[in-house]
Amino acid sequence: MKINVGSLTRDALEAKGVTIVIDVFRAFTTAAIAFERGASQITLVAEAEDALELYKSGYGQVLMGEVNGAKPEGFDLGNSPHEASKFKFENMDIVQSTRAGTVGAAASSKTASEIFLGSFVVAKATVNEILRINPPEVSIIAMGDQGVIKSDEDEQCAFYLRNLLEGRDPDTESVRKLIMTGGATQKFYDSSQSQYLPEDVDWALKFNNFNFSMKANVEDGHLVARKVNP
Image (cartoon, rainbow, N blue to C red; front, side):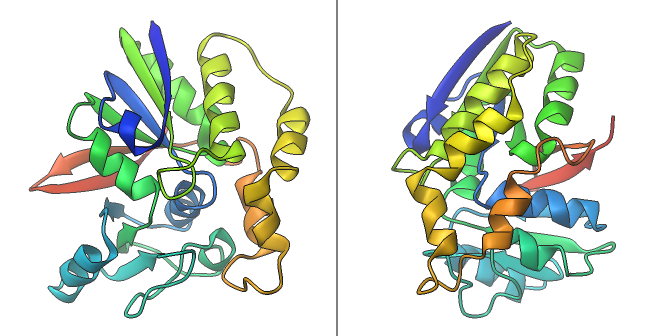
């Protein structure tokens, strides 16, 4: 199995084979919690305006996401794992738009054979599903901040996933400590940025908390993610 590790939207556009698109803070942690709480599917939309238009047309029951970290006008939920953990998603179809994860998934859909949504909470489950598929090539894309600036949490998640795919099991506490000192983490503890919650970090760093993966496919022109049980 050939494993490619890349970063940001530029590499998402050139993803090859089975691709894991990573957004730890916070899109694909939030998505995993929504699935755990009963969501049926999540339609991934790159731009918030397009997501809002799709939602207003009657597509989906919940619209969640962010622009500059905050919930856009007209959205039901922001991009907070903590907020999602309090919401009842049972049997609901979600439309999600963020500035990194959904952008990367949309970009990867142009060249990737299959797409998985990556974060620490579903890391081992995602790797197990890919090992079951046993593809000749895997791309791991760390989306970073806005898809244009590398971030510690997504880069470390990419390395963690690569190690798991290659049969190694890194010490999660060491990975956690590296991320906690990262620049992107500090905003969650800045009281002047109320859109970021400390609880979101707690959720995002619950390594292997869920035993399912999240796979996205293009369906009727939309990129739709669903929960894949082992």
